[in-house]
Length: 242
Image (cartoon, rainbow, N blue to C red; front, side, top):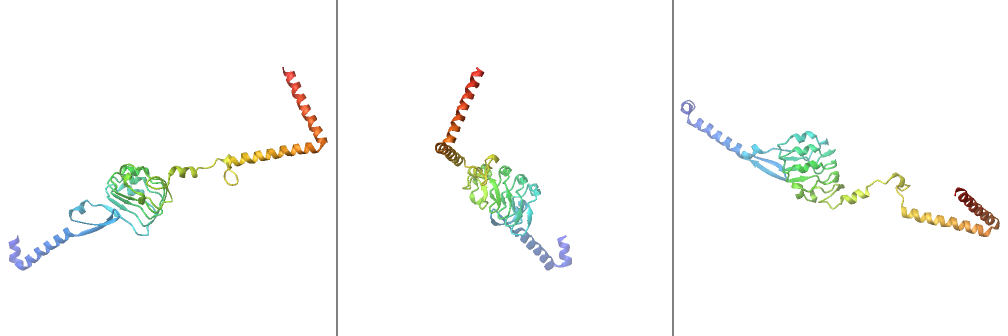
């Protein structure tokens, strides 16, 4: 076949076509693809591209909630949804990303709690939910989540637990609702103040009665008659009963 080409097309043209094919093949194998993962841009080329899979949708104007269908992409190694206007909660379906190594959800408006199911993803090397509106407790520090530092969760004002400095137990006590029977104009009653004010009022009333009875002899006699009647009534009641 090659001899036939030489006879019909001539050696120079055949050699040029063969050389062009070699150049094209070299350029194809040496092509480099840049992809952001683990907070850095990496270049990939050659056969490794056949094993690479990831999604980078960062730095755009997408809005709305994260579709839970992202959890069906179980083969991806990297998912970058940072620097967007995403709202809503983090889908628990992210726990299905069993091969993911980098998950970046920082700089959004996400709220709610971080799904505890994410601790089941043991392949994570980079994880960031910083600069959101997440609340509740951080995921349990086990497996790979024990290696993530404070910068992964920073700037979430309602998030608590290690490695953050905010203690969840103190947060829970301060936000505990006050029972309805203890609520007042300020939302609660200081029991110590209540006892002190009650004692003062009781003392004032007793002293006022004593002063009036001391000053007014008529009322004093009526008071003594009233006390005598009460004593007689109680006496006859006890005698009649026994």
